[in-house]
Image (cartoon, rainbow, N blue to C red):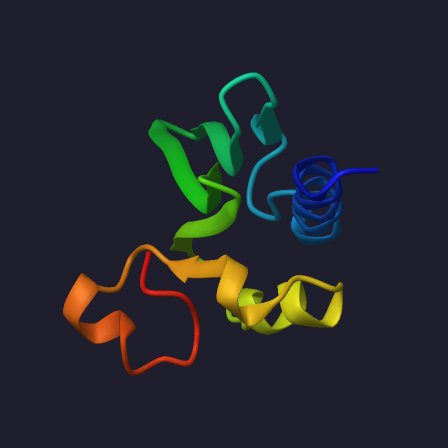
Length: 111
């Protein structure tokens, strides 16, 4: 398995591990979206809670230039640390929701 396939597998595993049923309404779907052609991966809640529309992005990853970009983390889990525990090098993880300036201080890749 090459590095990109390994990273795709790890990301899918994390998304499925984090995909919990929405607890407030049976009319809200938990969606794991994996676009392996363009390397975009998301976990979302979409549906209705009574008259309220629910569209919540929980996690978003991209793979760009051989690195995993964490574009959004709406969990309390340290997702970058989970990636490291699953075998991803810190130098292959970009905290994309931090500014480029701030990234130089977080111990992961800048870009």
